[in-house]
Length: 482
Ligand code: SAH
Ligand code: SF4
Ligand code: F3S
Image (cartoon, rainbow, N blue to C red; front, side):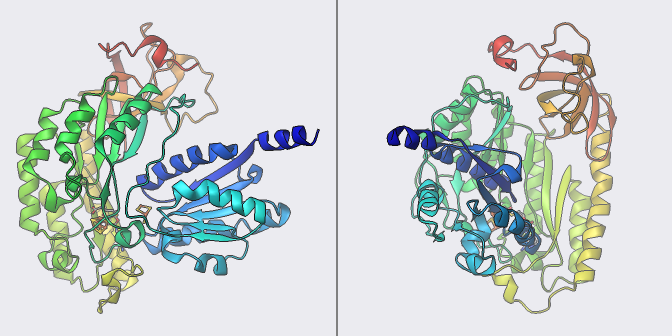
């Protein structure tokens, strides 16, 4: 009898709520966390009140991201009072950076685990649950810890997936916290990467984004394949339709990789190539190891090799000591390149990052004003690039319902459902499914040929021409939702 009770208790499904803040790497890590905790019977819930375990996967890239984590944690105080058995854990980059200090700052947190601790997480949680103790694990590993999971059925029919191919960073850009919170650059073994992508494809994923802080230096330390060779291997995976990667550091963008955009048929026509500043002096202070001229030359070469490529970038406004004239150089570079899209950020001091110790900080007001000028300028180019697509036909990989469609009307007639997907150049396209009878009811994961009818500043509106007939037999059973 006793044993039976124990077994029933062991079988009880527990609920896990994860709040993921930060970049795609954190999204990927959160997926790993969810998989790793299945062993303890945790299932994901979208309702925080229902959770037995809450994990906040944090980001430390700017102060604002860090504040976001603490304000979420603040909101959990009441819940913890109501549910004393609730376990609250803090993971990710702020956890790595602050360690035990988080336990002091937030008294009702049970565990803090760093960016290298996911493989040990189920053990930590078991211990916390059994002993009602508070634990910190921010140990950094010298090697990549591979976690293996049983391939899963992709319940949500996700068409896209992330795969981290390397962790850490050795570049030490002076503003950046990543080398301190993610550790040394390490590349995963190509065979692990390939088999993980194969599993994703088997579960219905059709587009994979390879993640690393600087994918161009993939495998160099370890003597694995070069990144362009890895792309060739990924390209051979049957059933995979599209490949993307991020991020590419301009200093290491080789001609080899530029040519990959032309030669590797599944590689999408988009590169994210963060420039950060258009001023040589600021680039030097940032330790970016390239000049404005070199950046512009690489963009030109890339466009010569692959004229249709979309280029997006990151820019920092108000790096310490950035003068008005130096800032104008950034605006000038934006005008010269005409990016397809640009993420711009106000400079933020980060712990351990060298630039935090630089004098001559730019005032908040000035940073705000500069940021706004960057955004206003870029908006014009983004809209111009989008408008140029009006009337063209684009192949869209369908990712799901559009934001507007939401979940309320999911039982609409197929032709009334608004879908969303992206072009090869990474532009969002929303469209109604046509009443063409050749359509499957659910087109997630399918390539659809869409005519762009209207362009907006952040998305495009299209009208489908046809569902691309796929030669690899993916339509039919495979592309339906059960
Ligand atoms: N590894 C990538 C960048 C990762 S961080 C690369 O080297 O390009 C993403 C972006 O955040 C950076 O490109 C930069 O623009 C921005 N960023 C990083 N640290 C920042 C800081 N301290 N203040 C403001 N923006 C920052
Ligand atoms: Fe940060 Fe620079 Fe590394 Fe990118 S390359 S993660 S900006 S240190
Ligand atoms: Fe943030 Fe860590 Fe990514 S600091 S941007 S979550 S690597």
